[in-house]
Length: 213
Image: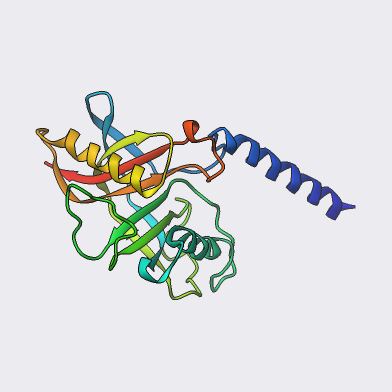
C-alpha cells in the first residue's frame, strides 16, 4: 500500500511540475545567488554572483548532430546518480551553455555549431554541497568546476533559445555595453531557466558576459 501511495504522489508531483513549468514557473528550483549592483538602461543588469560549483560536460560539435541534447544527457546523468556515490542531486536552474576553443568574433559571439568549436553545458550545484561533498562523476566527460565570485552583465529575453536567437541577443548585449563604464571580459554565455516545453513567450532566458571596471 505504501508503495502505491508513493507512486501516486510521485505522479502528482511530476504532473504539477509539468503544468507549472509549461507556464514558466520554477517552483522550488534553486537558482544562483546574486546582487544587482547597477542597471544600464531598462534591459541590462550588472550582477555580482556568489561563488558557485558546476558540473560541466563539453561536446565537440563536429561529432554530434545534437550538441545541446548530448551535453544535457551527460550532465543530467551525473545528477541523477551516474556518480561514484550513486547519489541523486537536486536539479537547479539555470542551465548554462557556452562555447570554448578559438576566440569568437564580437559580431557573432555565440556560434555554437561552427566547425572546430566545442559546446559546454553546466548545471549549477545546490549550495548545500561543498566541493568535497559532491560525488565524483563516473563519466570522464563530466567535471566539477569551481566558479569564483564574479561580476557579469546580463540581458534577459523570452522566446526562442536556438543559436540564431542567442547570437542576436549576445550581439545586442555587447552593443548595449559599448560606451558604458564596464569592460567586457571573455565571450557571452547563455542561461536557460525553463525546460523545452515551456511556452516560448513565458521563458526566462539570459545572455551573460563577465565584466570589470
